[in-house]
Image: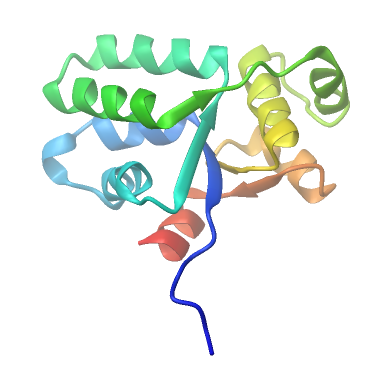
Length: 146
């Protein structure tokens, strides 16, 4: 007999997903629905790193909307900030071709926590293809979670 209880899934939400969702919150896009689902579902656990938190705050301030502020608050309430550690950063640097330290920290956080990164950023393709971390596109996340 199948259990009706779902396993907990852990995700790190890349900042580009947040930006796509709050650029035009009145449109109620699938990306916005995805973020709300990640926040609301009890079987989903969110993690983040210090750069991600700073990026989210910066973009929320830039867009200056009630929706952005509410989403940031809910994300921070649910999200555990992870101290990544140099060893995970070094591993991920070997597989990333980006000067953006935030992307490397996001990958390192995913490696440390064994979570899925949701992003449309192509900088993560190699580290995903090498099997170092799990990466879902936004469309895959929508298909799997909504």
